Length: 318
Image (cartoon, rainbow, N blue to C red):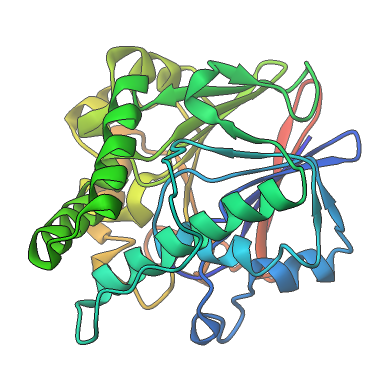
């Protein structure tokens, strides 16, 4: 099995391959200005590796840096099926517009919601299944050997979030509609999907932007026995708490964040806490050449970070 974290800058895009089948989790940003230096868009990365078909594409939540890059790939890659945590009733195919001079986080959420809607209707028009991810405890897009298990959030949380999207879309009062929209953007991370991917005795815990203050006890028990943790929320200060540090098992911690450290991501205090909890943990970054004192190996290929997993070993390509 191969697990690849693509350097999409500030965002998530992960590819999992097994027996010639590929699954995608999130698609990074759709903003061209994001892809400077060694960063690469999902579409360009798939073209570079000659990947023309994905068994499935999974969307963890509605934020620009997770959804919009996937939209850009639809005319270039065949996708067998889609999974999303919310399937709201879209009464219109038209993009939503909320006026100009809005905060960047709100315009980003609007872009992501519009992209999510377009992906939903693209699947419908091309007769591609779009599944409600939360109706399944596990999915097997790459075969029975590689289960994808949904560990967070609860089904009720996503149902509530879905209803809130529908309420916002149906609201006619502009001020109230905007208030609902702002609340959806604020709570999107808490409603994002955490996935455990298993292969033989190895496991990857991929947490999207869902931080440990929201996790249930069984998720921490999975963390204890895991090998690789994708740190939540791009390594911002809420990515760790005392319970995560207490249960910290993985030998590898991956942070998907841009090297400009925007929004105080890849926060040094986070890695100081991780190292204090587990001295020899290996800290890996999708968009860092070196980050002293936390990294001691200079990565030569900055466009991806790749794990290779066999029956009895896990290795990382730097």
